[in-house]
Amino acid sequence: MKIVTCIKQTFDTEAKIVVGGDGQISDEGVNMILNPYDEYAVEEAIKTKEKDGGEVVVVTVGGDKAQEALRYSLAMGADRAVLINDPALEKADSHAVSVALAKLLSDKEAGYDVIFAGKEAVDDGAAQVPSRLAAKLDLALANVVVAVELADGKATVTREIDGGTEELEMALPALISAQKGLNEVRYPSLPGIMKAKRKPLDVVSLADLGLSAEDVASKVEMVSAELPPARKAGQKLTGEVDEVVAKLVELLKNEAKVI
Amino acid sequence: MEFVYTEEERMMLQMARSFAEKEVKPLAKDTDKEHKYPAETVKKMAELGLMGVSVPVDYEGSGMSNICYSIAIEEISRHCAATGVIMSVNNSLACDPVKIFGTEAQKQKYLADMASGRKLGCLGLTEPNAGSDAANLSTTAVLDGDDWVINGRKIFITNGNEADYCILIAATDKSKGHRGLSAFIVELDNPGFSVGTLEDKLGIRGSSTAELVFEDCRIPKDNLLGEVGKGFKVALTTLDGGRIGIASQALGIARAAIEDATAYAKERVQFGKPIAKLQAIQWMLADLSTQYEAARLLTHRAAYLKDQGQSFGKEAAMAKLMAAETAMKAATQGIQILGGYGYTTDYPLERYFRDAKITEIYEGTSEVMRLVIATNILQ
Image 1: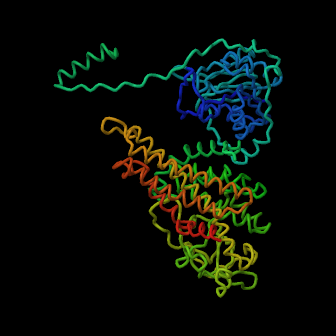
Image 2: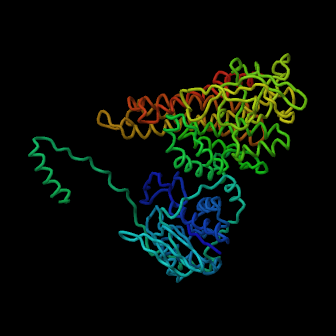
Image 3: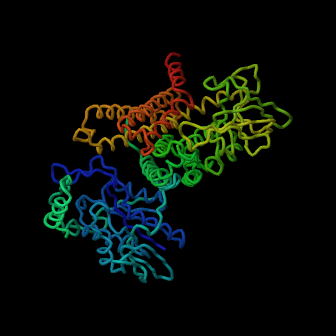
């Protein structure tokens, strides 16, 4: 069984977000991690391999630093990794990333049985790549999945929907995006970390994939970023009970507009 | 000179930090309050390879550097110093001497058992009348046929209540002073062995501190570790390495105090503004952060020298001295920054304060550290 997992390197969830003078988010001094939802995807891939055999290939689009997230996945137990790294992808949006991944997966890394991904990345929270990728590869897709069973060329998944869950059966190959709760993510063991250093990590450019810069031109341009306004201090009402209650009701109606 | 983590060190940091936050932190308060040995956590640490970090893979260790070891101990101790010392003692005081002085057969059995975490180790050195004066031992080992017969008492032995194996230092020839000491590996499921008094301590309450009692305890002749008469060298070499572990533990405590006090200072409003805006608080945090960084560099340098196979005794002593005093100061001032809240058990600062103190005492007091450093620079 060939299992592919798409990952992204993201800011540490504890990182302080700083917007630089150029109106862009600065990554200077920020600790980078494997996107937490992708951890579930990597874990599910490794679990599948442990059960059914085969190999786990982790793939990502990113710069040199993204190799760290791939190595971390290898330390958890994935077998090999592919990084699509190209200057033309520096500001890639969800569209561009899915174009690059789709080309890799329909060409050099074709022949997969299942693709796992996180349901979204915690940085932009766009939740676009899994759906776009499934569309481009013409695969069955299940998003926000909390349980997976693979057997007899089929995937039976449970996914979260508004107000409950639904169970789907899909023919493989299929793309499954992971929600928190899908599994309990393992820590890479120390021997795993040591082995990860020797596992293959291929770096490919757009040219290697047979793509041009135009093919991955982003459709979305980030014009500027700003931090949410600081929270204003609350109001404290004082005085006689009747007056305070009347004032509170007025504020709830006219200012907060909640009643 | 390079001040960047290797890939391996970076992954170690990410893994250990995540493990410490998710698995160690939630138990830390109870571990301390209930005197509860964190058996489940130790088991998980063993599965991850944390009980034999720099033991070669051939002996079921993880084959990683001492810098990785230091990183791991710091991250674990950031949330629970008791868990940190359990790990440090097994790695540094039990695995290390067998790795350095053991025969191939001893390594195959004892080192592999301890590095994999199947068995827990401790070091039996200190006695009631032999603390800093570590050569003044009363415990004896006498060769009788194919056995060594051990008699005596060891005190203040970390992991002593749970340990399966003890690296024991005993006198084989009392007339020769420290040249008459030898080291042994003792399996503690021995009818001649019992655990005596368990200490009720100020801090690191989740780790046991036990008296070990040996009464005609017979062990095979082959369990001599190193040569007869070289036990003091085994002890000193072992403690040199142990100091990297304790320095790292102290770094974890110091960082805990600094991080918690910093977070509090940003939130706590007095005189109409967060107290972090007050210079009195700022200078405390600035000094503590500076000392922490300095202690960390010293510790990583000592670990680096050990990895390179160079002498590191002086550097390990400097690291432990600096890190321990930084931990104590950080915990003291951390409580000061939290004021009355810091003095209560609602915040973990008082635990850091109690845990920090031991780092100035065990595996060589701060006074002995200064003695080691002075001896090195004056020789």
